[in-house]
Image (cartoon, rainbow, N blue to C red; front, top):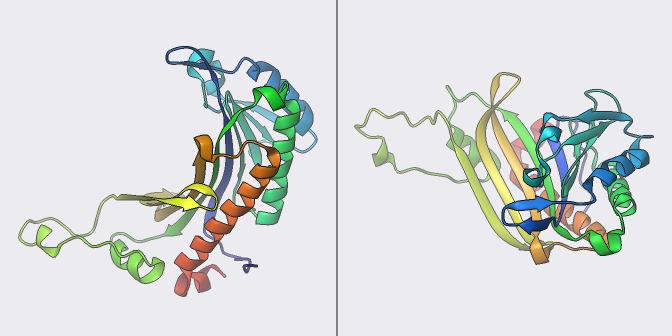
Length: 257
């Protein structure tokens, strides 16, 4: 289904993440013997589009405890998006307000081609065991004057209720000073799970509702070949897109158009 493009979309970050298995030479120790080579070979392949290299403070961590920790970023220019992140056993593609799915999908394809080409003997050594497509949206919200539970029910189809008697005669306000609601549901297409999260947060020092949608496949549910990963990406996006528009259908969709 072709969805409309929202001019005022609430998206603050879109993330694609791929993880591969690390070797465990001893209990609690996870390392990638090819990681140091991978950093340089990756940069050689992405520098035309992402020439600005940023080494993160985590790059000083000992190898034996750095598994799945992002250590390097490659950007078009300093502080610009999108960007590629890499660490032992993990690579991500991140974009922000300028996100458009078709362009993001093309960039994911480039990241996959780069990884499979740069990783030494990828067909033998690169064992994929986790895929994630994650969207972080933010909606400004006045928690002092508006009821977040009413907003979730009326605007986002989320009916969360706490028993009235919890508050009667207790001196406790029904307006939460903080909340973090998380839900996970098994998925068959793609195989794995879809996660929803609604939490109180801030955007530019203003109170806001943080809303995350994630599709994740790990272990045996994660495809290992490039062709199957491409199929996973399209299925994961179709699912997140479907849920997003079902949740905002009505007034919110009009607000975001």
